[in-house]
Length: 248
Image (tube, rainbow, N blue to C red):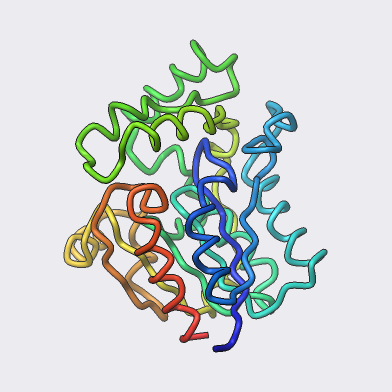
């Protein structure tokens, strides 16, 4: 079997550690895996600052691709990480073979992550940042409450989420996406977890955050679970990513 190079980018609050079971499974199959700690997150939490923004995180991934001279990469972004991977692919499309969006998608140019859930959620998060985040960090969510209805996620996994989460620099969420369109030439796979393909197709015409998920060169895989499949169904997610390698 041919080896594929994967770059795995986590979403809000999380570091490279959250990908460990998935990365281990892919490596056992002979693939090369780079899981990324973005600036201010994971083992690089000490680098967080009020100036850390989306561009900072895109720079992180571009630097990895260039310094390691990675090519024909399957670039995987989960949740907010999808904004990072899309931005990196837009700057270095020649190094990327496929974009994979895990329960997420690319945002239209000019939209920010903080605006995806609407003005009420934006206002609530702004308040959390002001009252509990020193004015520039979004605190991690109540993981135990989020996992309460997810049978696959036990106390050990919740404890790991609590221990490994870090406040998210809020500028990463409020800086609008700025893209040239170069990424749109790349094939894309959507791994749908908290919503189905049918729901996506219904939401896309009226929801800007989903508009880019039904145009262009897309394939889809449904993996029903909560929003963090690398926690709840890591073996299955690894299988999905391994199947993508055969499309590269």
